[in-house]
Image (cartoon, rainbow, N blue to C red):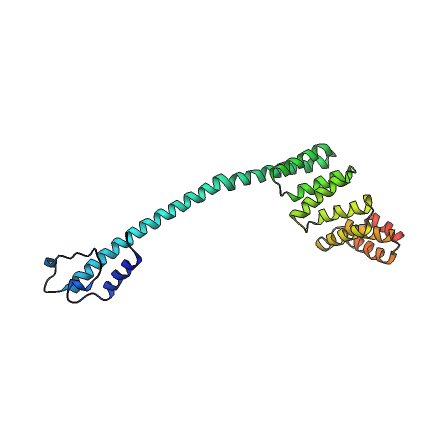
Length: 239
């Protein structure tokens, strides 16, 4: 109803009220009965009207602002109810299956654990930890291609997932026998997780297999610096 220009006109009247006639204003809806003016004091009359008009405009704008804020709250509530909350419920369900899978794996119930991890990825397609656990189980079962697929799924989600890189390194070392690739993955994993003794042991093993004993010794020592009771690392030093 009111344009910004109208508000500016009213504000101008408040600051600089007209001093003589009604013709000094161009507001189309202004109607001031002459009988209300006494002794030609148009300034007071215009100022009185201006305060009233300004208040009316401000009240209507405030009401509109209140309505807009209410609509915004409704939209946010709609988004939460129909988008965010269901998505969060999916994530929570995925975590439940993942935690169940970990318990089953620790009890050596690998088939049941595998089913639970697969369920977790159904509820959350970006559950990198679940893909890693699936990769571990398939690797242990000798299903190399399937293990690689799942490790790669995890790395596609998080390229710096040390456990996925470590799993890839073990597959290339033990099953595929491509030591250069194994070194690549072990080395990448060690730069992200420098506390995993098995990563450094894996590197020591490969370098001993390649007859690069000095390099192997350095990695075996790193492994023992993390855990000086780790017998496989002592074995690599024995080579």
